[in-house]
Image (cartoon, rainbow, N blue to C red; front, side):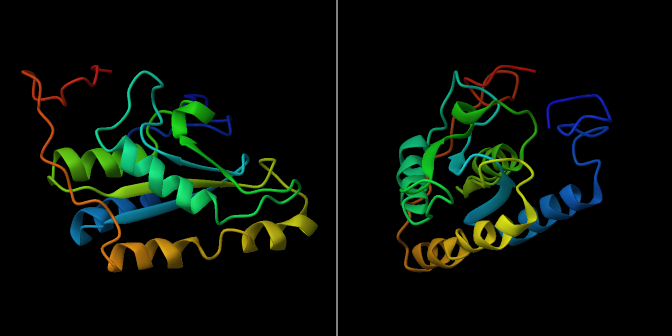
Length: 178
């Protein structure tokens, strides 16, 4: 979330990892060394990847993320229109601070010297779809974890790249301080 208003749908929380579910996912990801990660949100029928916090930068792995994101999107049918989901860098849909894909990508790449391929699948055409549409919306991307896992197990992902340079302050080079 990006809002500091506790009543807002996009409330970001009191601090990073202040909710038990976000700290549990952080701890699990740090302990297990994920290679891929899928998040599901509602509204957009898109498949997005880092960076979500800015349109001004792409990750060093943007080409690989775009290729894999396009493969995922091409396999998920739209709910109302013909065609499939749209693949895009997450910030091209909307910019957001503190989202999971940015954290897990940054942590793995810059702290663990590995690469996780994280994607957010935005299901449905609205944030709160009518109840009678939920079964079809939920069914559309249900195969995504299976084929992403198959690509990972088959080694059909690019190898982890060399470590990215760190700036003089210890921050990732090219990433502005917030």
